[in-house]
Amino acid sequence: LRRTAARCVLLPAVRPRTAQCSGERKKTGNVEHTAGAFSQLKRNTILSILPIVRGCEMFCCLKNCLNGVLPAQSVHITKTANPVQLDSSHMGHEVVIIKNGLRACGTGGVLANAPLVQSKSYFEVKLQQSGHWSIGLATQQTDLNQSVGGKDRESWCLNSNHLVLHGGDVIYRLDASKGSAVPNGGQNSPGHTVPGTVPVDLSPISAPPAFPSAASPPGGSGESGLPQEGDTIGVAYDHVELNFYLNGKNLNVPVLNVRGTVYPCLFVDDGAILDIVLDNFAYGPPPGFERILVEQSLL
Image (cartoon, rainbow, N blue to C red; front, side, top):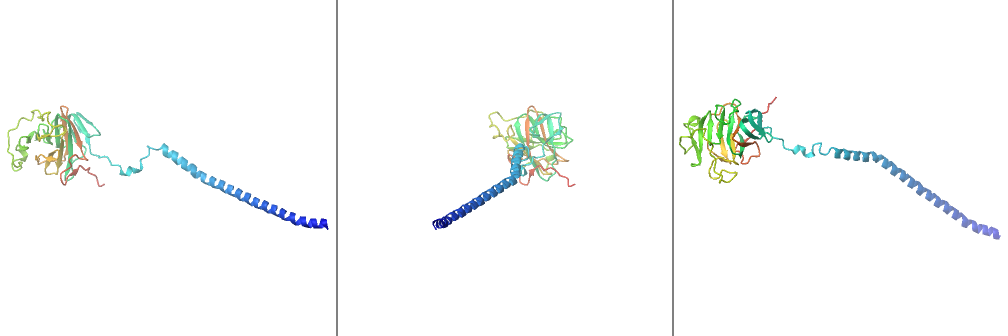
């Protein structure tokens, strides 16, 4: 009875323990299985995204390699360069064009590469360095190997000796004492004289240019009312009149009867340096005028 009782007592005590150990082993197996499945899932996930990661790394590497080679994303807002400039195929033999086709020096004349075909055109010329110069309009038939504009019938120019010339004739002479221009007959007279002025005897065209004294403030015409180094000459043309401006002020020298297809023209000599300004003007065009536009074909 003791053995039976002991066995009976012992068996209930052992069997639950065995069952408990089996349950714990089953639970541990489930955890290990779950951990193994998670590890496999993690490995599969990593393997699946590995090509994406490698692709991103390759893209970053490629981006760094092409940095500065491909155009920037803001290229669509980059300002297009103005196609109008001084024309090296229409200039004198001793003329030098620099500064991306915007500066003329040397000796002779040069035309721009675009004619004035719009109704109202405007451009400016900066007098970078004094000397003999001429600014205005001309056809492609003008003599660009001479150093003075307005000496032939194919050019109309304001000159550094304060004369407005066409065909070798003096149309106007800038008069500093009167603060205005004096007409000299010709194509602008009679009936086209500037109000308040009278004809006067003019000095020869070959006279040396008269620049203000060195005491005048640099970069401006001061009180002389005459162009000098550092000033800006504006040129406005509407197919009826050609007008010149000095630092934004109308010189009141309207030139009429400009004929043919004309281009902006610059003449330089004796160390003169001129910069043509085709946009971003220093003083701006008169009302209704705008920068030179390039004629485009509809074909």
